[in-house]
Structure formats: C-alpha cells, structure tokens
Length: 250
Length: 222
Image (cartoon, rainbow over all chains, first blue to last red; front, side):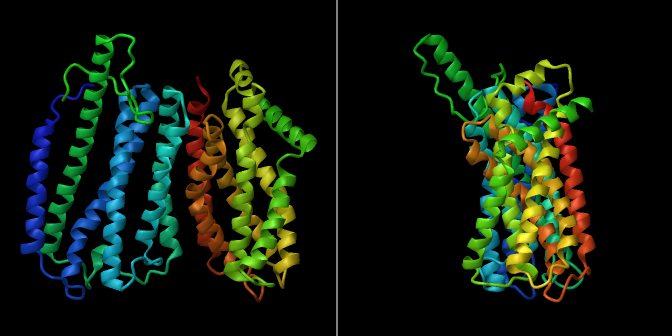
C-alpha cells in the first residue's frame, strides 16, 4: 500500500461527528420548510444522502473487486466486502426512510411507480445475495475470487437497472431535485450538500473502522494461536474475508 | 474458435443423446401455463398478462438449464481437461453461453406456439415476440453462464443459482415485458414504443457479454 497520508480513524470520526451535527443543525434550524410537504420533507436530507452513499459504496466495492482480481491481494477483497456490507446496512436505512417518506407524502408505505425506490429495492435484493454466495463457497481463495466477480457484475448492474426501471415508469412523479418548480432553493442545496458530506464521511469512517477491527481480530487470533500452538482457538468468521494483518494498524 | 466449435458441438450432442435439459424445460413450461391458467383464472390472455406469463415461464425454465450447465464438467472432470488443454478458456464460456441460447430458443419454439394455442386470440404477435425473446435469451445466457459457473463450485448450487440470477434478470424482464406487451395486444401487434425496449435489451446484452468476457477467467482458475 503506497498511501501516504490517509487521515487517521480518529480524525475521520471527529470530522464525521462535526459534519453530521452541522448537517442536522442546518436541517432543523436553517433549511426552509417545503411548500407542499412541510416538515416531513426534511427526511430528504437523511434519505437521499444515505441512498447516494449506499449506491456509491456499491460502485466502490466493484472498483476494489477489480483491483482484487488484478492483484490477488486479499486486502482489496476485504475492502470490497466491507464496502458492500456497509452499503447494505445503509440500504436498509434507505428503504425504511424512503417508506416513511412515501407514507407521509403520498399516503402509502410503498409506491411502485416511484422508479428510484423500486430500482433501489432491486439493487438491494441483489446485493443481499452476496452473503449466501460467500457462505456457499468453502475455499477461502475461491470465495474471494467469486465474490469479486459478483461485485463487478453487480456494480455494472446498478446503472443498467436504474435505466430499465426509469424507462418502465411514466414520469409522473417529480424527481428529487425538482420538488417545487424550478428546483430547490439555495438553502436547501447547502443543507443537502452538508448532509451528503456528513453521510459520506460516516460511510468512510465505518468502512475504515470495520477494516481496522478485522485486522486487529486477525492479529489477535494469530497471536493467540502462536501462544497456545495447536489449541486452535482462533475462531474467525466463516464468510468474512481474511485480512492480512499489518504492523501498523491505521 | 475451433475449440469453441468442438465444445459447443459436444454440448449439443450430449443434450441430444441424454435429453436432460430441453425436454424438462418444455414440460416445465407447459405445466407453468396450466398453473397460470388457474392462478390468474383466465382462459384468454393478452397484453401485459400474456407477456408476464411467457416471460416468467421462460425465466424459470432457464433456471433449470442454468443449474445443469456445468454439472457434467464438474462431475466428469471437464474443468480440469479444459485447463490442461492448450486452448483459451473463453472458448468454454462462449460455447456454454451459445448452448444456453440454443436451449432457450428450442424451449421457445415449443412454448410460443403453446402459448398461442392455449391463450391467445391472434398469433400475429408471436413472430416479432420471438425476436424480442431472442434478445432476452442472449442477456439471460450471458448472465446465466456466470451464475452457473459460480453456482457449480459452491455447496448449494440449486440455491445460489436462482438467488443470484433472479435479481440480475430483473432488467431483462422489465425490458422484454415492455416490448412484449404491445406485441401481444388484443387487437394484434402494435409496434409503438417497442424500439426503446429493444435498445434496452441490446444494451443489457452488450454490457453483460462484455462483463462475462472480462471475468470468466477468474471463475476457472485454481
């Protein structure tokens, strides 16, 4: 790894807290109330950044999968795995907040002719199969390789799927960024930008955190195995990719 | 190219002699039609319902073939033989994909007339529909080969294949259903708006053929 100066986990965590606090302060005290939807529209600042981060996370996972297949470095597989893992968790939050928003705005928990919501559900369902896929392959190295093939295929699937679903719907619902005529006012854009930055930082922090945790766990089990050699107490997760431990845990 | 022809000919000959995929798919399709007749409680179908019945049937029948696509290779050591042979492994994947397309076309050659016979008032939409299905078959085959190769090396093949395939096939179903609906309209085929769906299918085919070509190597090595 030739990364020179990645911010430390602590810096990232502090930046995330600041950005998210600022975002929520802006959401509640600065952003104007939406003309037609009123207060409930503020869920937009949570829902859309979450969705954006989850989808970008899936694409990031595909990029790491490509790097894993090219280099054979299990570290990239671990990154791809963690990226998908966190994007799925974000995805649950997206579906829940989207549902709440749909209920408040359109009176129904689920709206089939809202293409973004439906596309997201399909993508989410596809990525959920990542776990059974890893679980079904015993050999670690092959598991990592197949998981990367899946991550690449699914990464290409994301934009295609959004296109297909968008084509299938009559465009009766307003797109997110054109809620009122002529798009959002500047205050909303600013608030949205800060929320998006905060959510992005949260995603990155959590990914880094999980990678560090995995690496430490791998080191501990390796040390324990070295201590009581043969006792076989290093119990690693069966589907999580093994991470090579490095001297400096970032 | 030669290796591709040999493997494809081998697969088709095996299918002709053992008859293990296509007849099962055809039987499955007929049974599904009967199920749909009662599940939907209709004696005549047109438009979106007819499109849904034929596409769901083809997709689920495709799962049968995709499940079995690499089984012989695994059980009889075909994978090792391919790896030992001085040929590019792309030949194996291309041959399997084409074989899958052939199976699906054979299935549709039975299922489409059956659909017309059992449910449709007018058969005139079936010929353009066959073209749409051919495009859908290419996409299904491209994705199916990948999924099949992943599934055959996993512990739970019958579980993994449909689990991975169904979400990946959603865009194919959306586009093919969009194209098939006006073609199966009650008053005969209507070609309005079919173009964009054909384009979507072609794009899907191109993307997943390219993806398959890029990653197949990693499914074979060890």
